[in-house]
Image (tube, rainbow, N blue to C red; front, top):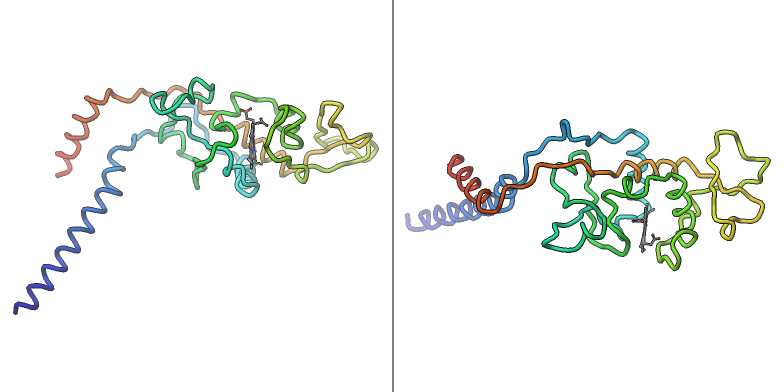
Amino acid sequence: MKGSLTELRLAAGAMAILAGATSLMVIVPWLLTDKAHPVGTGLKPYTLQELRGRQQYIANGCVYCHSQQPRDPGLGPDVARGWGRPSVALDYYYDSPHLLGTMRTGPDLMNIGARQPSRDWQLGHLYQPRAYVDGSIMPAYPFLFRLKRPEEVAPDDVVLNLPPAFAPGASKVVATPEALDLVAYLLALDRTYPVVPRPAPAASAAESQAAAGGAR
Ligand code: HEC
């Protein structure tokens, strides 16, 4: 009799801990996340080409050096650096898996499509970052390009316009479909549309209290 009471207590305690952990780690964050929806914001779903480019971004390890999460001015100078307004949950609506990143060896790329919208620059910079940014420590990605003799260049080939010092002799540098996909993805990274500002901390505290009250 005494033994079964102990087991009951043990089971009830375990369930209470599980319920507490679930509400702390799942329910509370869900309540605090903006319930925004991209309708009317200008955020578009990725095209097939942009999604292929996203796979290249993952495969080539861009996420190891680049974040996609400008911070609030209270947490760092990201806005002053020109990386864009602080990101909100809505910005990641179409991102699966998200590519927030944790390292910032290079700049944040959340809005690179708005900051540097030139396809030529993006392609050339991937082929050889040092051709555009003196002393850049970003790795070059020459394997995303092919060298062709001028007479081999097809009419629909995208030929790079490199600064003469970095052009490989008489050969032409032609972008592979992978490079074009990756740059299409980079150019799609533009979350410059306005978002509804967050309520002031006092108001939002009262609101979440009301929400918690309503859920009880
Ligand atoms: C080892 C770290 C590293 C990796 C990996 C890396 N980058 Fe970079 N990236 C940098 C650094 C450092 C800079 C700043 C210097 C420069 O512009 O070249 C930079 C700059 C950039 C810029 C210009 C940003 C701006 O604001 O002007 C773009 C675009 C970019 N990287 C894209 C990529 C992509 C796409 C990949 C993957 C194919 C990649 N990077 C991989 C370090 C990295």
